[in-house]
Length: 259
Image (cartoon, rainbow, N blue to C red; front, side):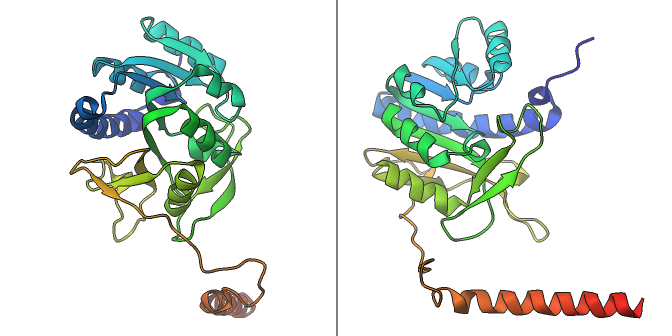
């Protein structure tokens, strides 16, 4: 018996259902006003969202960087065209322009997320929808993270994880004139902060023209006051953290000596 694929596990089912509900509500609002007819699902995995977009009446193509995902998606959804392409490669632009560019669960698995966003911008005729894990923090920065060698991680198992602010800034700098967050997040705990856990995921929209929807809130381009080339810039912000680290090291060291 063939073991289940990682994308078929219960965690992904619950996550996809919550994401799908939000996407369906937004597109039911925007599809007619924007005239959305075509879509490309970049990082389509096994084709779950490609199929969802097709049920919403869109002409859909799917793209994934793993050939085995493309083959399985073709088997599951033979009515949809799926292609093999690394989203970081310029060949992605060769697919053309689409009314909707859809990119869920991908950008944080990449070594070159800004380059990929530039590809997505070139392909977007009207609307870009992006979802993914975010690095904690308010600054527009990324962290280089080691990933596990599993089929739901990056191709090379190392990736830049951006903060939400970094994603927003990259969308603006890639050429989008409007970027939006969601007023109401998908109904899944990973989109909400609690007393004991931080929010780990975000969902964003970007466009060339203003969007009107009660589901969306406009986000300004973030900036940072830290000048990395100036040794005095940011010193005040770092000072309390350095004091905390020193205190922790001292406390742990004293505890070890007493033990």
